[in-house]
Image (cartoon, rainbow, N blue to C red; front, side, top):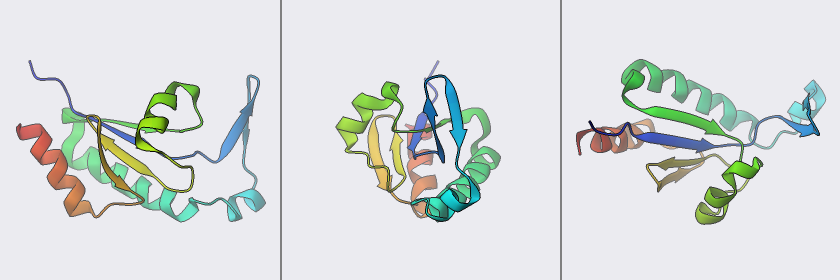
Length: 112
C-alpha cells in the first residue's frame, strides 16, 4: 500500500505559550501580525485542498516555533515572516503559491 503524501505548511500562529498557558493575540496585536493576510489565503487553500483531495493527502499546519519542527526549520530555512510549503520532504514554495502549481505538484506526487 502506498504511503499517503504529506504536505507540511509552516506558518506562525497568532499567539504564544508561556509554560502550559496559551495566549491568543488581541485585536490590536493581530493588526501588526506579519502574516495576517497570508493566513487568510492559506486558509482558503486548505479548504480547497480538503475539497479536491480529501484523505488522499495529509496536510499539517505547523508553527515553526514548536521545538518538534526544529530540524525542518533548519533544513528548509523557515522564517516566521512567510508560509513555507514542504511536500514529502521537498520544499515547494515560500509565501502563498499559485494554486495551479500546488495542485500539479500534489497530483504528480499522487500518481508517482
